[in-house]
Length: 182
Image: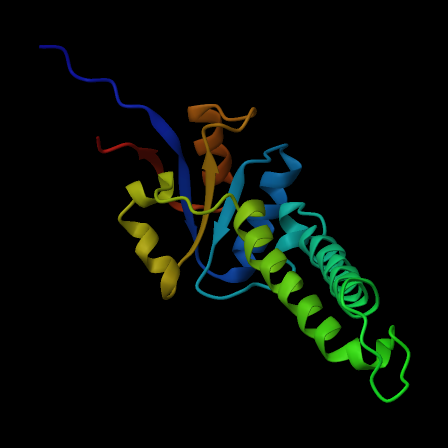
């Protein structure tokens, strides 16, 4: 019976410290790779720039949804108090926005919070229940004291041998293919 051919999902390399990983990320970015990630036990200052990542779009989404929440709360309260069920209380005007401020604030925060959670999940393509790096036993060190860089096979520049050689040349230790265990 012929041996089953296993698909290579990517390449993983370990680096000794955050500085080496940061330099490696810059070199991988400069080599043209786009679908790669760095795995560290803590945030590394400057990693976004080293990986060539732009500013997050999440802030714009949250601001837009917060503004939509403000307008929704204002319109809702105006409709209820001035159009749908107008009641004059102590001679005050029907549309007295000062009384609406607490509700406006709360609905703004509500819309912003939902936009933050849903936007973060969407922009990060989550939930993703499995990732090719989980094929490696060494990746567990990334939660404690390991610094890893992985390049996915879906990257247009990915070539099995060339990518592994690049990671070895830039100082990667324990460079391994990520092969499905299925």
